[in-house]
Amino acid sequence: MVLPTPASTRHALYYPFHLCHEQTLMRLLEHYRAVHFRDYMALQLTPMSGTTAYQDRMGQYHPALVESGQIVQGYSVSGPLDADTVSAVNADLADATWRGIFHHGLKNDRRFQRGLFDLSHSFAVGGSTVPGPAALLRLLEEQRMAQACSVEHVQALSGRRLLPDEDYDLEYALALVKTSAALVYTIRLCRQHKLEAVTDSEVHFHLLERTCSRDGLSLENRLVIREGY
Image 1 (cartoon, rainbow, N blue to C red):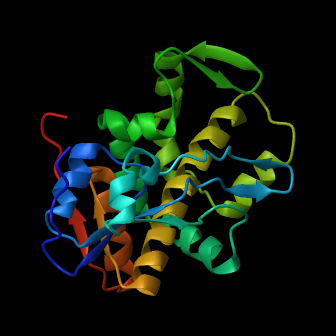
Image 2: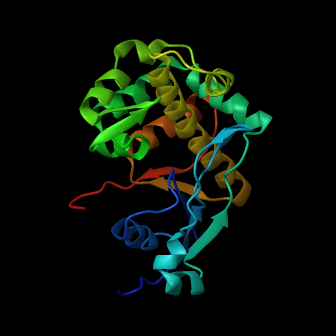
């Protein structure tokens, strides 16, 4: 692999994931002095429930880029949500336009879908396993787009025994919270460290654009179109 020569002094934060495709990384390094990466986001919504953390980082696959300073990593975005993050996530979840972008993306963008649900074979929901396509049909029911949702609602569902239909409600609500939280952390890291936001996920790009437009936030946000990979 030929390492690109840094072309500018600009720094970018890749979002919303902790890893990106090598071709995306190389394209970004043609325009940025360094690309910054968060660690895997493992949210803890209640004392007894959370998501699994993965320890891999981009630098494991590109150590020379870490040594040259072209990859910067180690931003922690795991653990309980603080009050400011809860407020920001709830604002997204109460925004009909934001929710529409999310639901349309879940329905039509396979990569966005795979980032939230592994539906390739079977899908574990509640105490049972159902075929992936059948689970997807339930998750894409149109009424979910308008169902009220908040961090507190997800915490309440996570903390009690669920009725059969509520299993899908919880899975969908968790996907909403995880998606919004990743974008809230993106905004926070970019503003704290003077970074430009970059992604190769079109749905996440439009969701972040909507949040910034709604809240009057100024943030450089760039979409890299993936072609052939």
